[in-house]
Image (cartoon, rainbow, N blue to C red; front, top):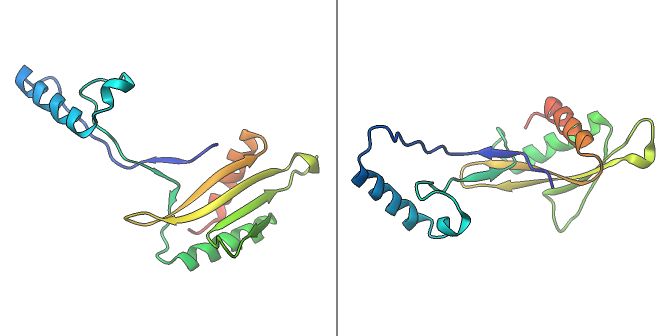
Length: 144
């Protein structure tokens, strides 16, 4: 499963000027926020970070984003289907020019984050390089 990951927050700490008591305090606060850090093998000074899946959309309403997705899929002449039960999930079939049997299947799902709408793209079946090329082509044209 390939996801476009966006790193939403960066936490930096300057270790050069910190004394041992300050490092111990930071270490204790990091353990309090992430008690499983010791089990993961990560350092005690690591701070949990937030990750968001998908691409942040500039449009504010979900129907505008889905219209832009459908317009882009039509412009690219890709086939798709969506379900009444899941209106924000679109299954996409990207045809392969030389060999129709080697088509790419992927899905696009729109969901709401705390801050904005996000469009998540997932590879279902096919070559990873073709998937990355298809994503590049889609987001080159899409106005989301």
